Amino acid sequence: MMPIERYRSLEQIQSALRKGECTMKEVVHAYLERINGTAHVNAYVRVFRDEALQQARELDTRLQNGESPGPLFGLVASIKDVICYAGHPVSAASGMLQDYISPFSATAVERLTGAGAIIIGMVNCDEFAMGSANENSWYGPTQNGLHTGYVPGGSSGASAVSVQLDTCLVSLGSDTGGSVRQPAAFCGVIGLKPSYGRISRHGLIAYASSFDQIGIIGKNIPDLYAVLQVISGPDEKDSTTTHHLLVGAGIPESIPIEGTRIASFSNAFHAGGVQAEIRDAFNDRLDTLDQAGYQVDHIEFPLLEYIVPTYYILTMAEASSNLSRYDGVRYGHRTKHAGDLEELYGRSRSEGFGTEVKRRIMLGTFVLSSGYYDAYFQTAQKVRRKIMDTIQTILDTHDFIALPTTPETAWKIGEKVEDPVSVYLSDIFTVLANLCGIPAISVPLGQDKNGLDFGIQLMSARDTEEKLLAMSKILIDIQ
Ligand code: GLN
Image 1 (cartoon, rainbow, N blue to C red):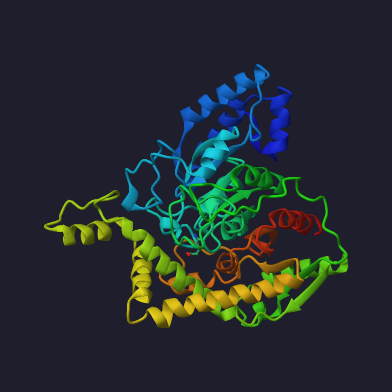
Image 2: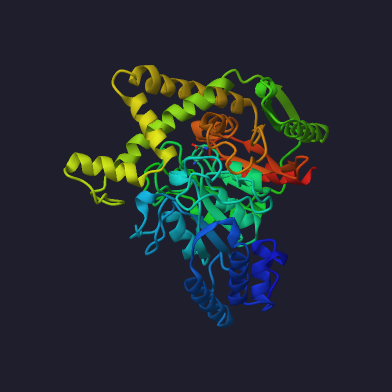
């Protein structure tokens, strides 16, 4: 069998295919073998074996006939079970959507396949993308691919694992508060959350619409950029898509050392909370940048303690509203034990949703209820605005903000299920980018004494993904 891990990038696969060193059928076969061989991690909830092989054969024929194959030919991707793919089931890892088959494809999927990519399967995640460990799933938890018994992060945990274990080249996940970056950090791969509106949300099952964004997980920056270029851009089916196009001239080769300023938050480490190995590796990497001539400023971010509460109040409010559509009438699970309409709603939702989703619907409904709307929802909206303005001020004078991706490395499966608040608090460094709609990326930074991976995160101003990707390359190479 072909050793697929030998091909480390899209460029290598495309070159091998063009030179006839391998066929697409062999590439897909090799990935399918790896999916089979790693089934114990519970990453894939659906594998499109026959379809993917058929598409591979078609591509081989096109290449043999000298026909143009599309910019993403050779790319094999997995997609998170919250992204619609026409004619295929999509369930948001929820009992509520078992048996649901999507009649349409997400814009991102349409663009991906339209450019010649092959979708090999759909991967596990937290139910409706709510979680940080991939444990809140109808299909059971996904294991970290290299550390049995540990979580892979979440909610796009299995997306990260599918890339970590070379069962595909890239994966599409979704990132509402870190769900692409945090699992990427826990699995030693790269995760990009683009600016809000960069990629159409049409066909992405909604969690919190003013935060949600499709993100890309892969093993190198050029692969992420190749996918981003294809799937991003305005879409008439999502009015929040940005009209600021990518420059499209490629990722800048380098970022000028002179005049490039990077901010980090000195108070990020004050409260303790951050694992010493992560803190030290993070500071070392910034020192290296500083010594190379980049200007690194350690500044105070006074609103740090407000970002997690603000994020959770607002996302739970939006979730409670978004998830009201699952009523047992229009689609999704319908109870078999209802006497009247009221009971039909109540029982269908009680039976269909899992514990974490119910918790969030209840809290979200609470913060939106008439007696508490001003105290919680409206106040959180105001704080969000203040956080956005403060970050904008920092980005007016700095090109990038650097933070660790997570305060700690992966925990053991089951270790935190009884303590949701500690899991919420572990999102402290990632939710900021979603509150502000700015792009953010996590790249591997190091490993702790148990060999568990952690990452460093970089953020930049809205719609500056190319600059962000260029700096990320430097961040990886400079170590
Ligand atoms: N862990 C965060 C949450 O549970 C982020 C999830 C996400 O980005 N989808 O809300």
